[in-house]
Image 1 (tube, rainbow, N blue to C red):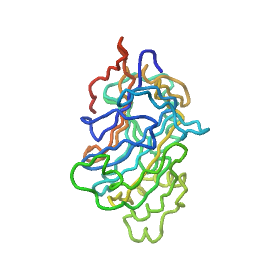
Image 2: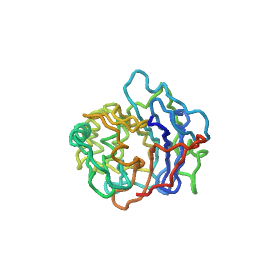
Image 3: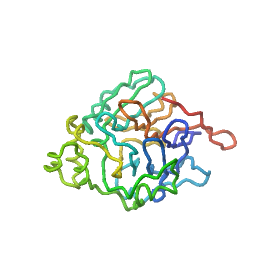
Image 4: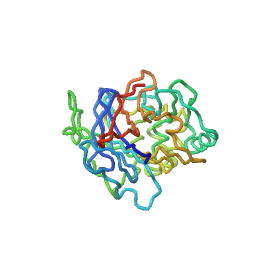
Length: 298
């Protein structure tokens, strides 16, 4: 970890309700609720030594890692409150609030990222630099299940999580397994439903490749009748230090000026937020207190 700094991880449904999450507590996920989406979220960071919600000792690791080389994972068990069609489906977008300087060799990193996911796009020279990937092609693991019942009315809390989403059955060595069979029910065309999808229910590689094509993504509507559980992980980023190793090795903070790194799920058409995850190395004062700056809005 950078000297004199600690990692703060916050999540929320918009910029005004970001809250510190207990990293690696993956049997007890945080809950987020907003006007358009409700979900459980578990963040995992290898060798985590950052800030916890109550100031307790951080959970350094989880049995989820096993012998894998993964450094970071976020798992979402979520449900949309309205139908999400091809124009409004929430893509995961990573962004910064201010301009950055680009490291020598950045083209190598971007080339590797595109090889991993051909839907990856970016504008790193913008006033607010961003990268973007599509949901159905970027999630390493995806499982779709029938919703347990109607979504309760009014604001939801964690007490409503099981009623809204079903049980959270993962944590530690028990990880999410691909089960995309019910994606077939989300196809827009009855003929396509009859024909089915050209990959097996546990074939995550073919599912990701299939949805790299725009026409295939546009043929699906995500529905409140289903719960979508996704795990995204990477061996390339160490958030404890903001170190990146992807074709070359660098520290992202050296080029971003210490800005928070955020992953934002939002509608593509109306700029409405579903979920925000923020990661920031924060200064520690002489008394050991972490100094968390005010929220940085997009």
